[in-house]
Image 1 (cartoon, one colour):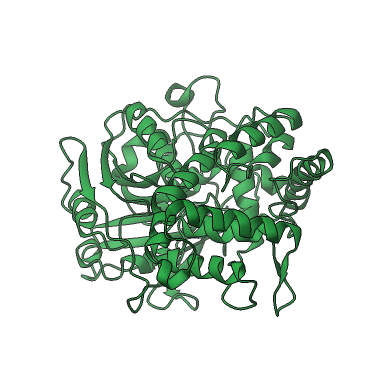
Image 2 (spheres, rainbow, N blue to C red; image 1 turned 45 degrees about the horizontal axis):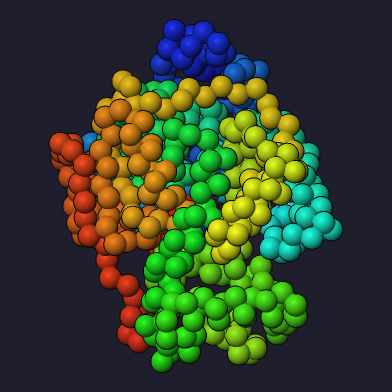
Length: 496
């Protein structure tokens, strides 16, 4: 750091077993220089320097954290709202653009976007471009294929830790929340607001737990069970995606059989998917760009669509096109910077005392895959079983001493299921939950639900804490025969 920043919390605050950090709230000796963002029209961008390792902040090593700002329309901001799109590992500097039309929110508040350590334009982690997801079909449980899967997961862990080196060990929640608190000080705020989606609920809950006196109004949208572990959170993917797929997507596709010709009932559409997938597993379909569509790629197209109902039309078109063995209509999967993937593994594997080994991973995949075939076989965090986890201490979020937070949750969220959010709600004292009924989208506030938008903005802007839990109705399913059915929402959650 340009001058030494003494930080952290006393052992009395976080427990005698935790490492001690220098006490204090010094004035940082740096400022953020805000200039127009080249990448995000309408935002200002800047950077600041944070200690490489907050446990040894005086050793001279620094990293860069990149941030953005949507300025308050009044020109005289009364506070700052920090935001995060989830992942973990999702870069977030573009997220404030989501709120550009939320007049009440941005009237007197600056909205801050953040690329957390490891990702985006901040100092990057990397796995050397290696990504084990898709290396083999996880439904194939033959001995040779299972060995290939877990060899690949082990290689993922090795690649991430070797290529990110010492930095990879300090890409974790314990370090990141301290970066956020340094940002708070650089913004000149005694307290900050927070809007975090998906993995951003985890980050927000841990920030609030470590710095409860710096919490103003925190909104946690599409909640992980942040009182549990990343292993448990990711293990729920199979159930969550299968429910969304069967309850929402399949009946919706059947309703529009005249358009997609996938079947007139949900079960017929599911059988079309299974039949098409089996054919692709045996004979992948080549595309004009030289790539191929196999069973795994079809899964990933359908899985990605479950996050947002407005992606249903594109996914149904892709399934129909591939089923007819054509070379048109199947959209290419979105690609993401390796830094985001590397940051996901670093945070999740560093934070988590992982329980599995090769044998128990295989048994778990077979159990979950049989129950939830769309996503149950995929074990995103399998590399954590081979991770050399560094020393790390995280105080479990309980909500004690934290001002009331507002949790927003849809009933059929695929990535962060309602049941996990309800557990977090029960275990986080003082929290209020806004449940969005008959809804399955992942990420609700700011995406066109007027009831949710009103409750959230009354909480953040007006300081109105709900006296108890609330509900709002969901928004209608898309009509693929109407114009402009495609979604333009930013990426929220795990960057699949």
